[in-house]
Length: 373
Image: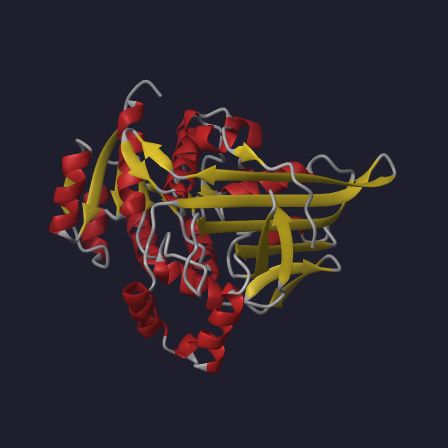
């Protein structure tokens, strides 16, 4: 990458700021951040010397015009805005990347990618889960002659939970509610199935701390399609402190907030504090046959809040933004498919980990305590 690549980041929130800082400070990218909020744009310019532009991301012609001449666009907006941005990127002939966990949006973007120009890719789900967890799981699967079960568990958790919810808002509230309300993909007996969110409750312990995990939507990305007929069982669950799932089930189902998600978002953002003091827990276990023996390998790690180029950053900011940046590096290094829809499973794990942006994952605290559940 001899010349700087021009990247347009749409969304000047916490992840957008982290992306802008990482890409700009790498010295390999020219960054433009677009957002409707002038206040947000002024704030980002005070922290990172990048170009900014005010734009309504729901105005697809305006977005397409903004993207003209750029090399890629990253949507750091709410999941329901991604498809419109993807359509604008198709019109502009610019490669598209996002962080969505929304299954319907990903399917629509996959269909859109069939119209991609040569050299143009559409790669959603480039964060943590979906994102890194799928890259890790797929790589672990390669070590087996025949697969049995793939378990993926991820949690973005407060370090110091002190409310009945045992939770603080550490990332997008819309995304959180979305994954708690929508159907979840899984594999059972080698076939793709749909399971209910908040179900499949289990408990396990890492480093002496007890956690619960339950079904949530979107975290495994396209891995079900990739491993259907190969793995007997595959599931993804979000990790929380015990008791959280019971309260969420009460809110969403007993009080029917699953039918009033905007109101629930308002209530949560007014009542549940956010925190920069968080930890991301990543756990993946794969079992299968090697040389005629049934074996299991496990990878468990924790990433703590830290800094991004001198600015305090939550762990979810760090792992989400660095994962996106690592994928961008691979794309511009010619290490991903050159056109069309690109899955996280198309990423070679060792190449991903060799990028400078993957350092938080490489340096993560390895968990060695026994696991039960």
